[in-house]
Structures are given as C-alpha cells and as structure tokens.
Image (cartoon, rainbow, N blue to C red; front, side, top):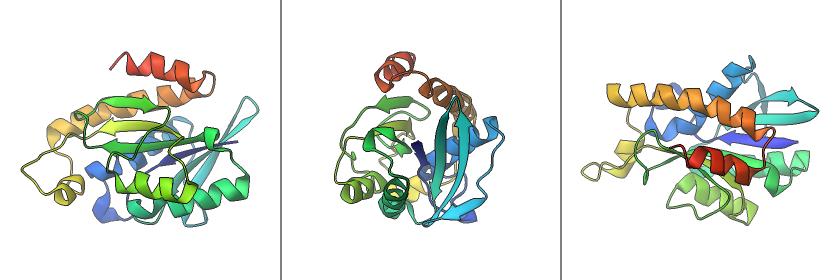
Length: 187
C-alpha cells in the first residue's frame, strides 16, 4: 500500500492558489483514473486506486497546510504504511513557476507543511514531488502563496497537470531513483 498526499488548504477561498499545487496535482491524478475524493477519515479526504495488485491511497488533508503532518501520520499508522511508500506533492517557492522536481528526501526548505510532516513522522526521508511557484520577493510571502494564479501561471499549470498523472503512472512501475532520473532531467 502506498500513500500519495497532495498538500493544500481546504475551502473555496484557497482554490487555485499557489499554495494549493498539491491539491490540484492530486486532483489531476484522480481525474485520470476516474475516482473522486468522497471518503473522509482522520481529517482528510481520500480515494483509492488499485492497480496491478497495489493499492494507492490519494489523500488531501483537510486541515490547514501547516498541520498536514497530523493527518498523514494517522493514515500511515492506521494502514501501517512504511515511510518509503509515502509520496508528498507540494508547492516550492524556490523553483521557477511550473518546474517539477522529484526528491528522494531532504529538508522542508522553509515550507511549513513539510516542516509539520517532518515533526510528526520524525524524519525527512520521504519521497516528494515539488512544483515550483517562483518567489515574488516584493510581495509578502503569505499573500503571494495564498494568491490566485494569474493567466500566465494558469497556462503553465495546465502543462504541469498533464505531466503529474504521467509521473504517477510511472511511479507504479519504476524505482523512485529511476523516476527522478526520468523526470528531473527533462525539466
């Protein structure tokens, strides 16, 4: 069993904001597999995809992004999911908008959602897909990440949301190292 988590903030006011890249990415995966997030447990909306004898739980924590670790920990404990079977999709301020980067492990890079995950799991050693949202230094960071996407960003987002389901499909068959080699070199 594998847990794929998209990070974001719940609620209509946060839809299509830069900080909700994880939610938008995991929605794209769900749409590709014709499943929807209708089940709720442990403070998260989830659905399951069964493919080639493996179960993939897609999760959207419904607490604010900086409390995501609490929800993820509950799922991992309940389903007895080992850390190597966790994949977290999040935004990244330090990458240009629309760039996708897969990481085997690493620090939070100042992302409060990732910090909270590290606190609750007691490790930084989990797989990630980071989606760049750039960093507008002239704006307050909170206002920027919670801001709506402009037209140029929406166009780049459409490209990202085509790639993410492809990454997930390959994730089902490749080692994470091979997945990184394939997708990190292309972008």
